[in-house]
Length: 249
Image (spheres, rainbow, N blue to C red):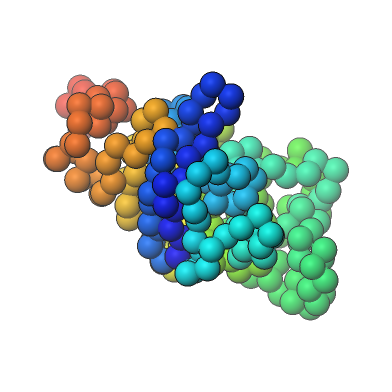
C-alpha cells in the first residue's frame, strides 16, 4: 500500500530521519514505536504530505507521490493527531463533515455516513450538536477518529492518538480501535511511544531510535530476538510496576 525508499529529513542541524526504507502492507496495522524525537512522527508527516523529505521516494498504491499530486493522495488518507485537532468554534457535526462538505459530497451521503460512524465509534448521538469543549477527552478522540474515517480512506494515520487520555479511558479506546481496525480491514499506521499499545494494536512494530528503524517485527520478535541492546532496554523500561512485583492475585 505504501513504500518509502531511502527517505530522510533534516531540520537545521538535526537529522530527524536517517535514510529509511519501509513497506506498509495493505490491510495491516503498523506501529511506529520509539522515544520522543526518534523520527516516528516525521515519517507520518512525510506520508501525509505535511512536510517533504530531503531524499528518497514515496509510493502509494504503486503510484509515485509528488508535491504536484499529494492532495489527490491525501484524500485517500485519514489523519488523526494526538489532541484530535478539532476546531473549537465548530460543532462536533461540523468538525466531522467539514471536508466532505468542502468536496461537495451529497447531503444524504453525508448524513448516512455520519450516522454510520456515530454507531461505529459509540459516540452518543446527542454529542453531535455540542462543541468540543462540551464533551469529554475520550469523546473528542472518537470525534477525531470519525473525521479521519469520514471519506472512507484507504490508509488511516494516527499520531499518538491516545497520549493525552487517562489510563482507563485509554484502555477502553484501545480496545475499540482494535475492533474498528479489524472490522474495516484498513491499512493503519499508528505512532506511539507505548510498547503495550503497539503490541495490542499492531500486526507489525517498527522500533526507532535516533531517526532510524532499529528492528521490525511482532512484539514477540522484539522481546525474544532483539537486534541490539537498545531493543531490550526499551522493552524493560516499560515493564509495568505490577509485572516487576510478579503480578497480583
